[in-house]
Amino acid sequence: MRNEVKIGILGLVSIVLLIWGYNFLQGKNIFSSDIVANAVFTSVDGLNIAAPVTISGYKVGAVTNIKPSPDYSHVIVEMNIQDGTKIPKDARAVLVQPSLMGGKEISLKFVGDCGNDCLESGGTLQGNVSGMVDGILEVADPYLGKIDTILGAVAKLSMDDNKQLNATFKELQGVVTNVKVLTDLVNNLLVSSSVNISVALSNLKKITGNIKDSNGEITSMLQNINTITTQVKDADLEKTIASAKEALDNINQVVNGLDGTLSKANNMIDNIGKITDFENQNGLVAALFNDKNFKGDIDEVVENLNLLLQDIRLHPERYKTVLSGKYKPYKPVDQDPKLKDGKDPKDQ
Image 1 (tube, rainbow, N blue to C red):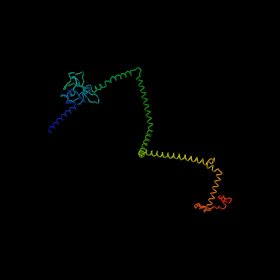
Image 2 (tube, rainbow, N blue to C red):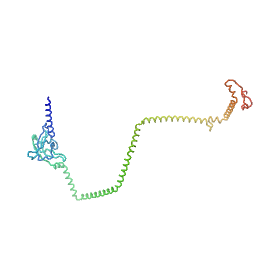
Image 3 (cartoon, rainbow, N blue to C red):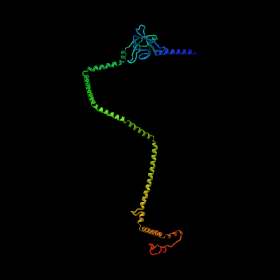
Image 4 (cartoon, rainbow, N blue to C red):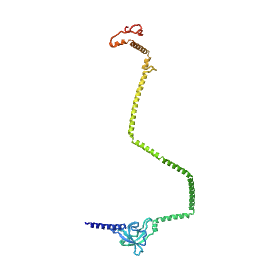
């Protein structure tokens, strides 16, 4: 296929889409069999193209065109109504404004079913204009009865023989007077307290100023706290606690060992006390020291030891024969206290 043919087809499709889009924005659908009807109005102030066409508030179409008659005596409004909508030929097209803030629309008013004699494309309907007051009355109609009831009750109350309304007004006047007195008291209180309020605000200003001046110190303190908490967080507390627990266990073992050692020492001291019981003379050592024969024997042993040491000092040659195995007879020392009769104990 040649490029010129492709360009021609693309241009034709674009034109068709453009026409269809333009009509669609105006509420028309050239590919459907909707009903296209006209309505004649004396004035259409506020009505725009694409405004809805409704039946009892339900949208059945849209305004597609607005144009004046050839003599400008009236305005012809073209409407596109959905296919299948049965509208009598004597129906009225009423221009209404459903809300104060909304735009105007066309409402189709009729009674009953049209049967087989219904409005077709190209037909014309008589148009009427509904004022804003009529729309407001339709909205306010349910409340009018209630307003009448309230007004009747007020009128009945004002004609009461007991003059209750006048008494109520007097009470209200008294309440208003009391409220006025109360407001005067509040004003006086505020005036008298204004100085205190000013002082309090001044103190508050000073406090905030001090806080502002100390902002650097507060920031530094917060940074230090943050550093401490970070160090505590990073520290291996579990390992430290385990080490401390192990140290405590070792200390407990040492304490238990000391307890055993002290217990043994106490037993030893008790045994020593039993051995050296000098007070009751029941101990072994006390018994030895208090035995007179034992004391005499000890004295004799000490005396003999002194004599032996004296003899070794005076005659050391005597003790050299111990190694040679030769025996030399003992020559007593002059005036030996052990030889009272001048004889050697070995000769006796």
